[in-house]
Image 1 (cartoon, rainbow, N blue to C red):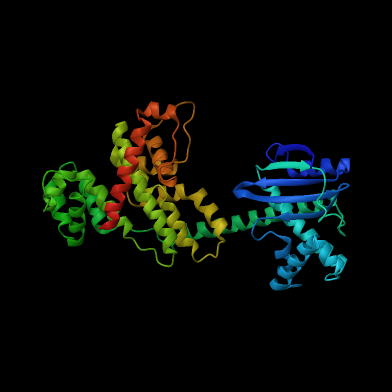
Image 2: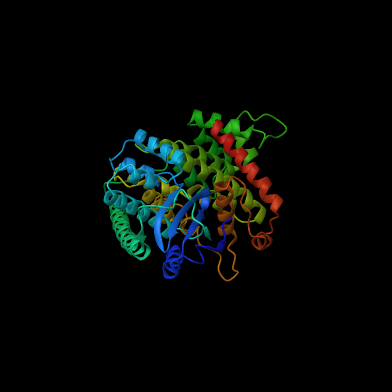
Length: 429
């Protein structure tokens, strides 16, 4: 039975320190690292030398490296794996014993694989590590013995080079995005005409129900959609609403504006952008707007401000997607840029669309945490709504924050469900 030398976590003791300790003491052991999403990396060490390793991560295995090197095709590697298991030896030993690769080339390929494993481990902030004695018989007798210090040194050099390349690539991508966003060759989305007119009407304190009705009646498609929503279970009253005038009376002018905003923004087309990804962003924006509105009413803060803040919260991401389609930016980097720049861009859109400065600031600072116990209610409402939508209702807010806002946990559940129901009503029209 294997003896456990010790257990630790990569957050407490990084892989570099663990391997250096093994090298210093010339230990024979098995280093098992269990990372997130149930993927495991195992490193086998004999007298302080690395003799074998394995990884269950897709795209990071020695057999895949052999195929990618061009020395073997996939069927040949599968055959070698099968034969090595029948013989009860490691793939490395099977390849060496059967002279399928010169030892120097086999050693170099394994070193490349091990460096890739190290690069993966260097980026991990947590992971359970267990050091045990007694190497399996299938691994013993390996023809490869790599010096730990040398492997670590070469891996650190590669890691630094990758970081420099990634930083340079990121800076180039940011520069290209900024050039497109702020130069004349790119225009931010234009707010639909009827929505701009409705916003102007709402800014006039003398506007009446009749003024709003006259404007909406110029768009028959919009009328039918509003009537369908007004007669939905969410708004349903004692009787059927059959005119836009009655719909405005039942829902209120502000609610009509919110619904029209949701309908019109959902109809904006983004040419040349992956529609599935764009649709997820737009759908989440609508959901956040509706949930934020419900929370705002409960907290007795401006529901219209909450609606617009929630709706425009991540609209900057849609702009980045629209611009990035011509810039050949890698997916991982694009996600990073959207996360880091979308708030400022969302505020820029709100400014272009003449929304109040309060809305612009709400969008710009929506990821900012409450400091020194000071709670900005509308800001907190937006953050809770955003987290609820992203977690599909599973987000658990800070009890102290909820107490400050005057919200009970069960209230959040009800408001989230109501907001999602309204979202589906909008999508169905």
